[in-house]
Length: 96
Image 1 (cartoon, rainbow, N blue to C red):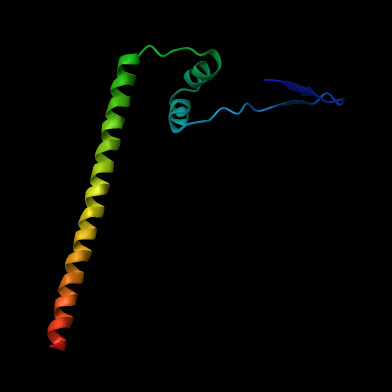
Image 2: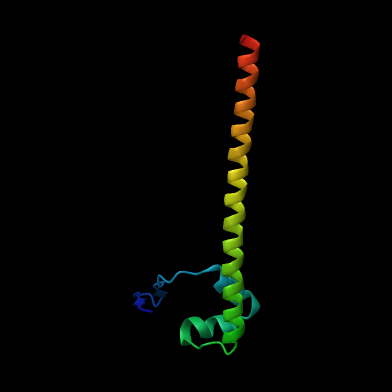
């Protein structure tokens, strides 16, 4: 981090442009020191196996959510088609 020194002895620090993710906020809320060590000192957490399990769980959950969203969209599309066909049949029968 670079410091800009002003004549009246005020120091301004320039921000780094690192992204702050939701997991960073979670780490910070849980333990500020842990967050700082990970960001500044690049200390690797000791619970790598648990973190790996968590990553895999979240990936699987995300895939499940994606599949359920696609199934819901397909159901809405099929419902629309069925309602359109029924409406068309009713209109055809009324005109005949």
